[in-house]
Every structure is written in structure tokens, then in C-alpha cells.
Length: 287
Ligand code: FAD
Image (cartoon, rainbow, N blue to C red; front, top):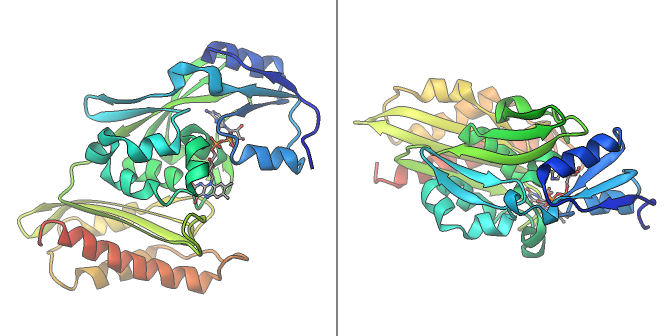
């Protein structure tokens, strides 16, 4: 099928894009990489009266180090993030995860703003935004505001954006870690994850000083596991830790099932990935 008829607008500033959405009176839709939106348009699962194309807004494409965080513009392509040296050195968990995002052709077009706004529960960037404690800068008719990633995702494919809002950029705090890992299982490389986990650890002598843990593909939104992080803090690092960590993660998550995989299978995968991720994180500094 082909999309239902729509008016096409190609603004060159964020202000003009927000104004075009406001004028569309709730009937407007933003186009970024088009990798998720175009199929929805073609199947007429969405029928906007106005399509506001962000691709001419140059200020939305950037990756910048700003003090203790890295700012990424909403129109930055997955492939640019994957290949960025700055991301590799400051946000290594993100760098490792990016090659799991879809296939090369999709990564060449797909954007971080599109991925967060689409809010797929098995997509890497939404999960990473929780993992890093990112902040989204969003512009609407009444100006700019900041939304913490933990407040952004509401349900599967659902977030707290209003119809006239545009995600402008995302700030990712730089984590200090002594070891980290990103693990994922998908049916075919590049498919959406059946289960995935990101972990980072900071140590003090032979105990865990701080930890970050997030998972995806197992619930209606990605999840940051703060309870697991709290329980890891202060525990002694020994060779039982991967097993203990796996048990801890499973005690805090009850995986969803769907037509791609049963709940039991996803739960099993998550346990195995948790164990493997902890082994990798601990191996980083020869713990
Ligand atoms: P678009 O398709 O242009 O837009 C998506 C939605 O976000 C639309 O509702 C649009 O209006 C809205 N939007 C876009 N930008 C903004 C903005 N700045 N502000 C507000 N709203 C905005 N993703 C993964 O993470 N992991 C995968 O494994 C994966 N596999 C895929 C496999 C296939 C076959 C396909 C087709 C896609 C896959 N994707 C995967 C999705 C891909 O990453 C998309 O690029 C991404 O979800 C959407 O980004 P986009 O820039 O293409 O957004």
C-alpha cells in the first residue's frame, strides 16, 4: 500500500517545525529517519494530515562532549553513533550496543530521536537512555523542557511526548566504571532483541562500590533495575558473583511473552545474559 494523502512540510529550524506541528492541530507527525514511520504510513496504520520532515534542520545532528556528559542531537543517525570515537571512549556501553541496532541500511537512516520517540521496548537506545540516566531536551509550543529518561517511557510504543513536541537532543552522563558489558540475544543478528542487559561496575578494593543495570525486551518498556543496583553495592567480589547476579536479576524481573518468544524462554535468556554480562564486566580488570 501507499500512504494516505498528507501535506509535506520541510522546515529548517526547530521553531518552524514546532509551529508546523502546532498548526496541524494534533494531525501532524514528525519524520526523522523514516525507518519505523514509513511502514506505518504505507500500511495506513497512521494517517497524519501533515508530515513535518526534520531532515533539513542541521542543528539536530551533533555529538558533543559537554563537561561530564555527551550531548547527541535527535537527528544523529545510528551509524554516526556507532562510528563515533567520542562515544566509544566516553559511552562504551552505547558503542557496543549500536551494532545490534537493526541492519546497516537501517542504521544509515535511523536516528536516536526517532528511536526514543518510537519507544519500542526491545530497542537499544531507549534502554541505554535509562541505563545512563539520560535527559531528553524537548521543544513544544511553550518552549523547551527537560524530561528524564526514567519519566519518558510509559508503555510499549508509548511515551509522554505531546503531539506538538519534538525531541531536540539527549544528554548522556558519562559513567565512571571499572568494568562493563552489553549482552543481547535476537533471533537473527539485527532483529529486535528477545532479551538484553547492560551492566557497569565500579569497585572499591574487592567490593562493588557502584553498579548500573538495565534490561530490555522483557517488559512493556526498558527497565533500569535500581533494586539490583542497590543490592550489588558493597558486596564482595568473588567467583560466585555471576551466578548471584543472575539470580538477583531474575528475582526482580518477570519477563513478558509474545509471539516471538514465551515468557519462560525470555526469562531463561535474561538469566544467562545476566551471568555472561557479569563475567565480562569482572574480566575487564582481571577481578
Ligand atoms: P522515524 O521512523 O522517522 O520516526 C519514528 C517515530 O518517532 C514517528 O512517530 C515519528 O513521528 C517520531 N519521531 C521521530 N523523530 C522525532 C523527534 N525528534 N521528536 C519527536 N518525534 C520524533 N531499532 C532498534 O533499536 N533495534 C533493532 O534491532 C531494530 N531493528 C529494526 C529492524 C527493522 C527491519 C526495522 C525497519 C527497524 C528496526 N529498528 C530497530 C528501528 C530503527 O532503529 C528505527 O530507525 C527507529 O526506531 C526509528 O528511528 P527513525 O529515525 O527512523 O524514526
